[in-house]
Length: 295
Image 1 (tube, rainbow, N blue to C red):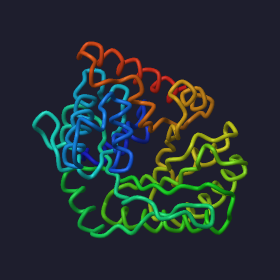
Image 2 (cartoon, one colour):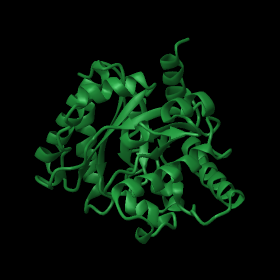
Image 3 (cartoon, one colour):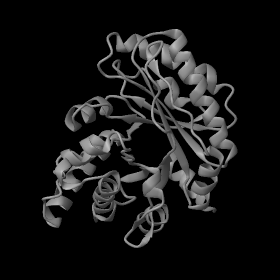
Image 4 (cartoon, rainbow, N blue to C red):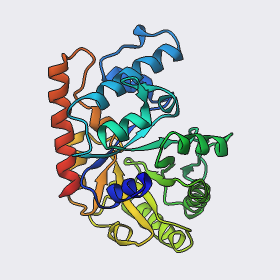
């Protein structure tokens, strides 16, 4: 069995969730602050990324973090070129932890228009995908945001997402297509219905199965058709700003969807904790998200 086949089987059939460790330049200061690292403790982007890398390394090297409960982990591009415990990051995740590595490839969001934020262009995409594949990455993640039930905006987001998804598939990787719906959007259930219809229409044409990363739906069971679709390897959910307890509650009510949490995963972790305190807090976080994902 090839590594890719084994990884695909783990994602499709394994029990657990995907850890989102892909905080980028814009979200890193907030992630560090929640981790107990003040902005006064670094003076430039290089130092900031070194500190967040240490946070990620502490998480993935913890005995609490392994393939028993964590199916995959999404890395930021800077992390891909770094090391965990002296090994290439993606290689460490798979070989040491049996956690399937993914890479965030989007470069952030355009200004809001038609009730959505599209992805910015991704220069050097072909080279990035080839490098990710060579480093043992299984798939990619690419995020857009939907704020309003605007059919044109949602259609534009999905056209862009699925076109990029085809490029990822052509490179031998599996895309995580992520049209996030902002949890503060009024009429979120109606937005999610429009989004689901658009996704279903495009799944009929996609060349190979993809992963969907969606906001936990306002209406329980709203994405059951997507979970059961033969062109969907997995449906994963972002916490979207919900605190972990609330995100877990909502997730557990949607059978077949697993977590892909970032902020909710690291909630309660601190740079000031001893290793014993840190590992205990991480273990409790992982266990609660795991249970919500397999319910």
